[in-house]
Length: 381
Image (cartoon, rainbow, N blue to C red):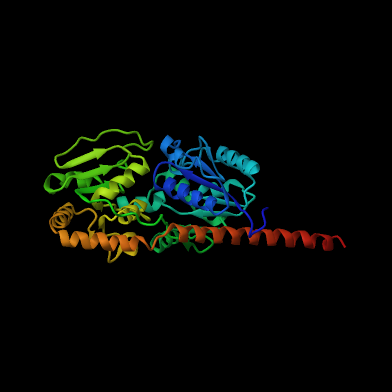
């Protein structure tokens, strides 16, 4: 094991379906720039070429692509044993000091290095928020059991907000208390000339994003509503039916999406479930006025810097967007407030928090191992 205070080697899992890739690849790149080494192991659908291009020239960062399914696409855990074998084989080659999992059940794989789990979302909390009930099918009960065991099997678990930390604690009762480390991004880059359109971005196949509401009201909103996002789990680019006053595109590269945010005047997110909302943070940093669903996580992060609307009330959404498109003073004030709030979520602070946690876990493990080795000779006397 690498001694704390010198270079540290991290094995980090990620998926390329949603915001987890942005979080993991951004964090891994920043950690490597600070002298750590990171092996980024992807689960689920393979990353797109533009996703891989963004990390290919980072010194100290390697990417391993697997064919292992995401846990919510294999809720029964049929592939769990094969996944464990493959991940442990990677650990044997990489020899990490820390295993950072952006998922839950992989904590059950029998790692040698200390394990931390980051809770980005979960099916049980998604189900309750989207459908108002508990999942009861046997396959989801197996998933829930694996999430609970994964959380309890990790040395530490983290959530990006207090709201989601408390939700996970209430649903799964893990053995240890969760830590809160907010997601962070590079310094805000607002500066482009704003144009009269509303942006909405997210997985359109995911009912949690609730983007169909915006398409329903688009004909009655003065400005075009441009929705960006994959229509399928694998991110296939397909065109929606284009309604009056709306424009729909498939999934964009992150660079193209950030450029679009620079030009958008308003970011609308009617999500009924959002543990953090990295897209909202990036839009705020690009100087968009925020109109968000009134859910606890958004309130925690954006109170005083956004307009809040009842998530499923299309008439309230229509009124809020109509008002904001016509009120330039209010729009500019919200753009300024969002930009100021975005500065609280710096990538450097996120990197420092994770780096400190890695070194702490590695030091504890090394002290425990050294102490055990020192006591062994006395045991034979």
